[in-house]
Image (cartoon, one colour):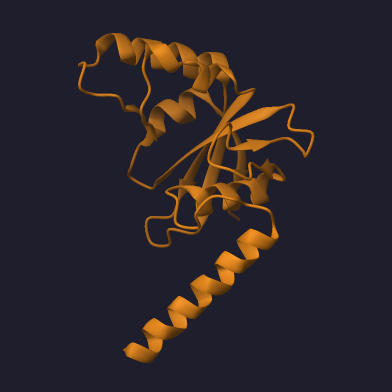
Length: 156
């Protein structure tokens, strides 16, 4: 067991070195980071190199901004720490991408939907108006995503 643990740590260190070589400054284990890289790779986007700002851009000019939300099959997409005072985290984006990952393989994307920013903003405002003061997380269900988005990629 110890040999397997050492191998896994060695692979993580190699992955961390590669991340640094590619110019990413955030921690390898930052929640969502690896899935953002996977989504960006599938869609051909330029993934943001820090944790601050949009998740990705259409290219290296960083003019067209995207936000990624992901969940496993059977789950819901979450937008964390959102309230009326920071809706710019929604409005700064030109589009949202909702990536559904396999329940059996957390690194395998299954489907990706594109949802217009105005649609996400309207739903966020509706949910914020109805949520308690202690809750700052908004969930978007898979059915909502299918009904309000466009399927742009699906695993073959």
